[in-house]
Image 1 (cartoon, rainbow, N blue to C red):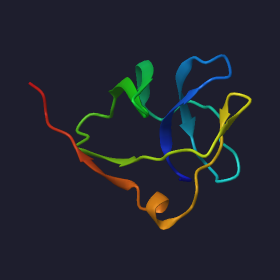
Image 2 (cartoon, helix red, strand yellow):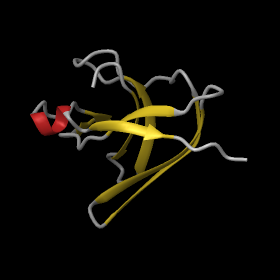
Image 3 (spheres, helix red, strand yellow):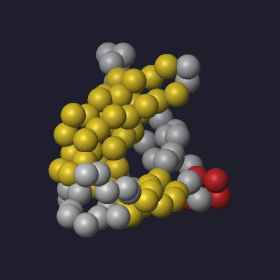
Length: 103
């Protein structure tokens, strides 16, 4: 979705699973870019038809809620993910993630 800062995992043409960061500024182009917050230790795995993404985020101090979206992309061409469908179930695949303070 435009306006989303995303971690996108996909299978590359060489068969390896990768995860990359994207600041999605339009629906026309999905271009790898940095996010407005620090993300490290990126990895992904694919098993039993499920893609799992692992990462460490450094969020601004006092962040208590982040919005999340999830999608199944339509394709990957030349190691670049394509945009997902725009059906209601795609556009409603979002929610709030409430964070707990760790001491």
